[in-house]
Image (tube, rainbow, N blue to C red; front, side):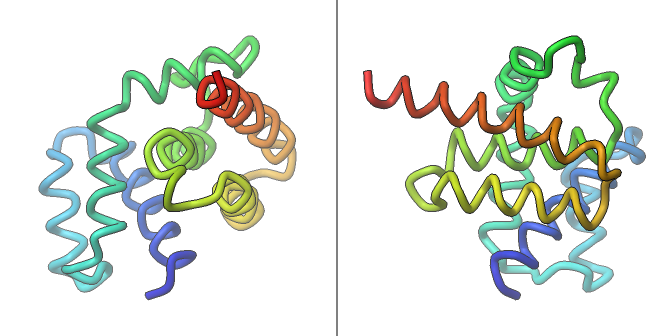
Length: 139
């Protein structure tokens, strides 16, 4: 499984978690591995899925800061899942994944799974977050 496919798998897990609120994140992940939807030893998928949940408050805070007039709770489940994954990569994997790759992959996920009008919104929010992170790391 290449990184693009792994990223799509994390998105699918995050999206699924939006609907299976009565189950723990661990149960959802284990079920996906048992059903052979996920490779059992993919560190990126495991670490990113659980990392998003571990840092969800900070991630949603960043999204809320730049999603002018919107709160994460009001975003579509698809948009919210893509944003959470991408913001996690920007915040915690920026030394492994270039910002431009994270942003491009978010747009590709949006093209495949979200509405056309969501693309500009995603791009604007993610670019603002990227710029804040870059400014903070320069200062």
